[in-house]
Image (tube, rainbow, N blue to C red):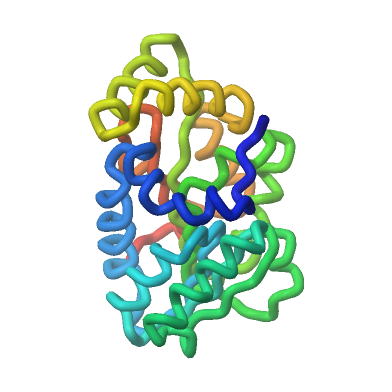
Length: 229
């Protein structure tokens, strides 16, 4: 059975569990911070796709007090948790949270300087991935960028075994690791890293590169323009 990200129990345990499930989770956010600080102006509007419980929003809003954020997530309970989190920290004046997937961007009259899709696209069905990246690309300014991190296709059993070992070392129990492996088969729509780069380019990004890798997790940056700042 596919994991229900709208289930209250999943929502409440999400932040603790994901740090054990995703190798280098904190480092992902540090790298995203560094890239955004390098490429974006002092004032910017950021789109966060699949905002979850709002951890990413909180971190970036505190690091960049001049920026505004629009966050979307298809799970209403995740959005509600994110709103509570943001309200408690008095950050709501700069953050808008909306229930929906990337198709809702067609109805949002905002042009963004950057989009973040961290640990999201691997859940998008293969046949819908191009539309996913096109929706993001079309919401960006001509000089905008997209940062994404996703699990990519396993070429052999050893790659999956390596991930299982790493998550065990990160704090998951053996039963949780087996559940993770089962979920990868049931819930994820994995493709190769080169296929993700190709999707970026088809979606309208002029320059696409990988900025990080932890086993089969890859980070990508796509620029709408071909010359970096």
